[in-house]
Each structure stands twice: as C-alpha cells, then as structure tokens.
Length: 106
Length: 353
Image 1 (tube, each protein chain N blue to C red):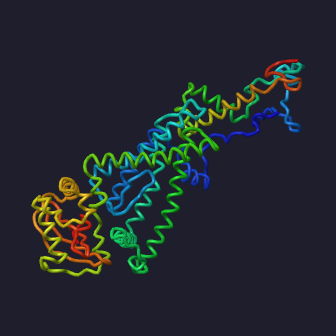
Image 2 (image 1 turned 180 degrees about the horizontal axis):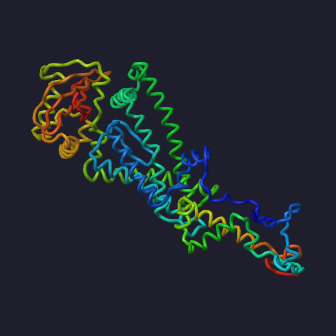
Image 3 (image 1 turned 30 degrees about the vertical axis):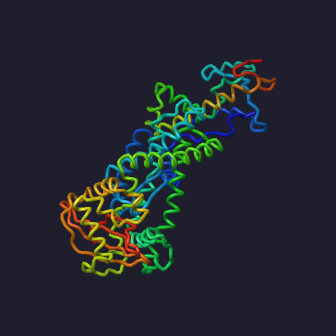
C-alpha cells in the first residue's frame, strides 16, 4: 500500500515557510541539490489543493462542484472565496531573506 | 509565517449530530438557490393553509396574528410581501458589502423563503384548541378596550396549552431570526459586525416596508377599514362566551338594534345600517366603505338570504350580539357590539355559531 505523504510546507518549530534542498529521481536516484522555493499552490493546505484540482476538472463550474460534493452552490462559492483570500494572503507576504518569492531559488 | 494557519474545513457532508445541527441551523449548506426557493414556497403555502385553519395571518415579515381572516388573495399578497420585502432589503447590502463576486439573487431570495419554515410549526401550534380559546378571550377583551385578567380566566388545560404555545413561539421566533440571519450571511458570505449590523438594518427596513406595502394594497381595495373594524373571527364567542339564546327583543334592545342593522346590510341599505354607529364607527366606516367591507368580508358566504337565530354575550359594558345569517354558499354569524347607550361600536363577521 502506497502512503501519500503530506509535503511539509511550514517549519514545525517556528512556522516559517520551508524550502526544498534536494530532489531525487525515484528511478535512477540521481539527485539535485540546491535551495528551491515552493510554488504557490504547494503552500496551500492539501484540502485546498484537492479543491483546486476538482475545480479545474469540473471546468471551473461551481454548480458541478456543488453537485459532486452534495452541497449547495453558496457552500462551494464561499469555499472558493476563502481560497482566494488565502492565495491573496500568500501573494502579499513580503519576500525576505528567510522567505523569498514562491518558486525562487537562491 | 504561515498565512494558511486558519485552515478551512474540507467540503464534506457532516455526519451524526453535526449533520442534524447543520440541517436545523444552516440547511443552506445543502440547499440554496432554486431548490431552496421551491421548498420555501411550498412551506409558505402549507403555513398559509394551516393558518386558515388556525385563523392566523402572516401580516408582516416577523408577524403572526390570530383571528384576522381574509380572502385568499389577501393572504397570498401578504406572504409574498413578507418574503420579498426582506429578500430585497437583504439583497442590497449583500451586493454592496460582500467581497464575493458570486452573490446570486436567487440564493438570497431562495434561502430567505426556506428560512421561514419555523412559521409552519408556529401556526401548527396555534391550532391547539386551548390556544384558540385563550386568544379568543384576549381578542375580545382588546376589542372592548378591556384588559382584565378575569376575562382571560379559563380551564387549566387551556392555560397550560397557551403557556406552552407562548414559550414555543419565543423559541420559534429566535430560531426564525437565526435562520434568516444565517441564510443572509451564508448567501452573501458576509461575516462579523458587517453581517450583523446590515442584517438588523435590513430586517427593520423590511418590517416597516412590508407594513406600508400591505396597508397601501389593502387600502386600495377598501380592506383597511375592514381589518380594523370588521374582522372575521373563528367562532370565538361560541368557544368563549357563556351562551344565552335571545329572542328578538323590543325596539330599544341590543338584539333588535343588531337585527335592524343586519337587515339593512342584507338589503344593501348602508345608510340605514350605519344609522346607529357611534362616532368612531361613523368615521371608520362611512356607507361607501361599509359597503366595500361588507362585500369583502361576506364574499365567501355568497349573497345574503335571511337572518336566523341570535345570541348575546355580555362583556363588561358591551353587549355582543351574534346574528346567524343564511348566505347562498355558507352561513355566517355577524357580531354587532352594542354599547350601554345603544350605539354600535363594532361589527365583525364570524363563522356561524
């Protein structure tokens, strides 16, 4: 059974945004070391990422999303509003030495 | 720092007690828009149907009043005005204040329609016989300007039913307002003080608006005087009063005065019918308005045919004379309130006793 590990995004000690140090090919085990910033979507909670994936697969139709989830249209739309607010909050975070722009490498 | 620390609950269907609570206090999580609108309208129609049985009317956004019967079309106008006045009053702040670009008119109106379902329980409780009898007593006391606890005294079972009803009404009204607020906040995605303040302002505006619109509508057809001076009641007196059948009396008796007035109404002689009105009744119901009120309130009975028997109930300084009358479609009782100095101070259309 394959366990889908949740990618840690924030430091469990100080809550700062984490960065990736190494990527490795699972087939040939070639590894790339560096300092890689996480893309914006990867900084969102897993639930939000799943919501975005479903939203895209539903061709951006909130009505279809509501039907799929078995909830009302405003429930889905409010969820989308919350998600938009989260993305805006991430985007407006000031870039610092500890927290460079998403996706930026040092 | 972590901007997503306040994580949203995943979009899942709640289970168990949480599901029950969600259905009770936020059914809009599951139903909104068109389906909520359709279900809400069904609930309003059912509430109106039960309201006819309970002799209750919804004459305002948050109003439920007993013993004011009305033609079906008036009931229809009332319920539409109640619903739409609040719906549109909330739509304005929802569109102006919400940061969401997806606020839909159908969600605001639909969820507000569905939010009115506690009214159905309220009106069902109003059908309890003890509640009807007790409100009859209150109604009659108010009609005569008397508010004496002895007038309200009744069987213990009636009192218990009425108190239960009174407590339940408070709970149901709180539930109703909570649902209306939740429907608004959820459909507009407004939160905090912005949602609360705008909701209260819209609710007050809608209550005032509904009263004005209903008054204008009913005045336009001459029904306003009817609502204040001529009201169809449940067979209140039959339930409340200690009945005493009275034979036609002498010319000066309250019975003779009532029979004379009813006879004139039956003939369509409104001037003669209003001959013994006191000053207040003369002002409220001049002959032309009396004609409209008479036709409106006896419409379901059909054409007047004849007077049947009478009975008289003494309430403080007033004689309430009930005259059963035969109409082509349905027999009705006409209640004439006679003062101690032989003037008519009230006129009501009621079911036959």
